Length: 229
Image (cartoon, rainbow, N blue to C red; front, side):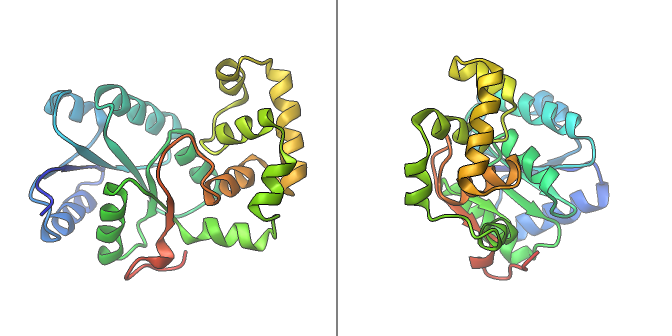
């Protein structure tokens, strides 16, 4: 059923790597493998390989993870990338947004929910933890139409960048404006959305579908066997 895509597990822990690989195989993914790092993938799979979905352990070294994901993006441009973390926190979510991950899952997820998440991501949608939506609800942010109407076109553009965790310098370069101007726009965005920081603004943008990536954001809550975390 899933023989058109290859699932690649990138996990430095040998035991967890073997367990995750077994779950994926038993779910009906005949083409799958498990490696320790992105560098191993680059030397094992040709750049013109067919469709790939990477399950990448986020780990504690953010720079190492970012470099690994960037290598995968450069080598396999059309691949799907899902980050897997020991637990959910705002910093790691920001990292997932910044590297443009197609999904963010924690290791607390059940095998059934993991498989369903992969299926949803293969359909072109994004899967992130329920806490993203819970945070948006708890913050009592304005409805999408009213919030979007309050943003200027440039602020809306900057918000799309924030949805991926882009740094001010990158936003300035890609939008053709000064970095100081980006900071002014970010402050205005936070004020209009009632968000406390950039991560909250990014979460709001993602939950409202404001992203440069195509596809709908899906939360684990609606997936069979998912846990709220």
